[in-house]
Amino acid sequence: MKVKELPPIKRPSHELVAKIQGKEAKRKGLIAAIEPDSGDYFLGKNTIEAVRKGRQKYPGAIFYCVRIGYQAVYEHRGGLLRR
Image 1 (spheres, rainbow, N blue to C red):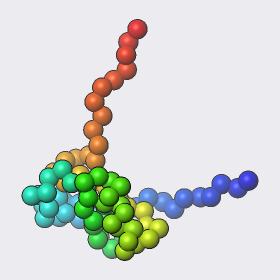
Image 2 (cartoon, rainbow, N blue to C red; image 1 turned 30 degrees about the vertical axis):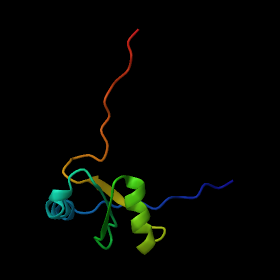
Image 3 (cartoon, rainbow, N blue to C red; image 1 turned 60 degrees about the horizontal axis):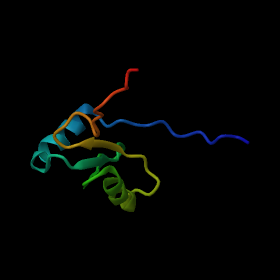
Image 4 (cartoon, one colour; image 1 turned 180 degrees about the horizontal axis):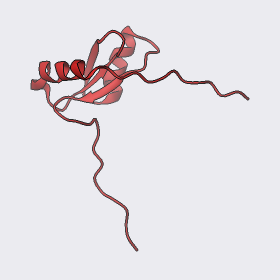
């Protein structure tokens, strides 16, 4: 059985991400799903909602997600238990 090769993941430019972060600064905490080729983005409360909105216009596209006002989309708190 041959495994299907996935297309490479594209990142939008740092300038585009900064532009979106600045333009939507009042909507801190929302997720922006960015379509890297066009620069279009779609906002949602979570990644699923934002990507669903984007897929209506760009079916099958791979989106790059950022959280408005933050450096990362998700944060991990916690760690490993030591025994």
